[in-house]
Amino acid sequence: MRTIKLFTVIIFCAVLFQSAAVQAGNRQTRKVEGFHGVSVSTGIDLYLTQKNAEEVIVEADSEDIDKIITKVEGGILKIYVKEKSWFNINWDNNPRKVFVSFVNLDKLEASAGSDVVSQSVLKLDRLNMNASSGSDIKLELEANELSVSSSSGSDITLKGKATKIQVDASSGSDINASELKTKICNASVSSGSDIRVNVSDELDANASSGGDITYYGNPAQKDINESSGGDVHGR
Image (cartoon, rainbow, N blue to C red):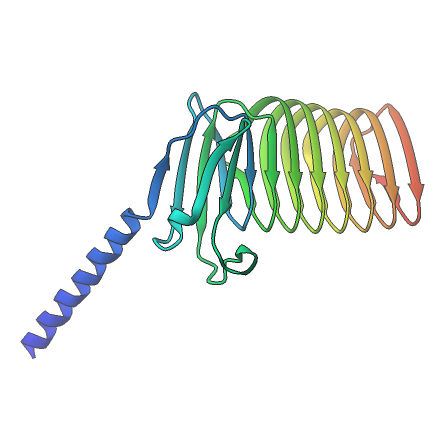
């Protein structure tokens, strides 16, 4: 009986040791430099942090980690999974995480079911961001100018403040910037999409094809256009 118990303990410890070793081997620091934009796709979870130096850390299962590509082309850090499976779908739903530290960022793209989250307040001059094909972007930031586009069932959530913002949502997507305080806003929505903005000075809003725009605040200047079942209203 004691022999059986001892054997069980040994096996249990071995499993724990092996598990710890596997976990330690599933984290890679990649050498990248000279990028001002990030493009992520194929279901990867991206975590953004603004620092004084650029860094990329990849976390994934041992069978997936080397399939995750991180390379800079034309100043854009491209992050995606390279594999032979149909449409690069993550059938096992294994976590694929990439942590990116950047110095400056002016372009952000998420597609094919990827998720992007900021881990700190991002302080930027200008940022052009786009989410498509069921991707999600959640950022807290302080910026001068923002250009935001969402399509094909994607969601974008923004918090913080910006001087000027341009937002465009289509094809059943959603942009929630109700907690992003802005002075000037140009918003366009169509095809059953929703936009929520918070604006104090100027609002130019266009809603069509069942799209909906909700604005918070009391902008002094408003230019509102509604067509084909589109709706613009204040809160």
